[in-house]
Image (cartoon, rainbow, N blue to C red):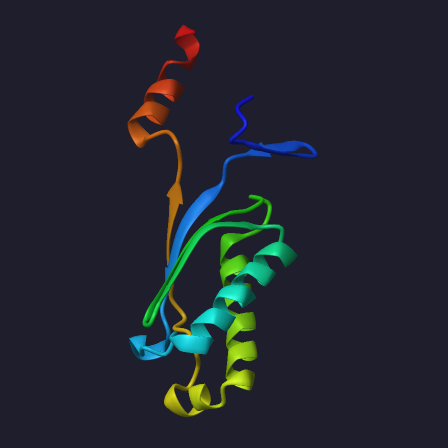
Length: 132
């Protein structure tokens, strides 16, 4: 198989997501030391959860992450862990965050699968299975 696939016990996968989430009220609070600490927190969480951050951009008012992880781990739980853990750590270290916004993150997020095959190719492959 191709090297781009991850091989684990009884599972082979290529599971990648583009994820975006924002601070509450889209406040521009992810700057300076907060940004640096948040970056390290995210990489630590990824290592703890056996996920791979392939790209990470922290803007003052949102985070964009390109991540790969084991599909047996639910996406929403992983995102909740990223947001919850980072919020707790940052709000304890930077009390000014508590006075600026009631919680660090909004409850919502954007996610999109990222793959090497487009929708049309998958449909054709499935439709032509009996013709192979």
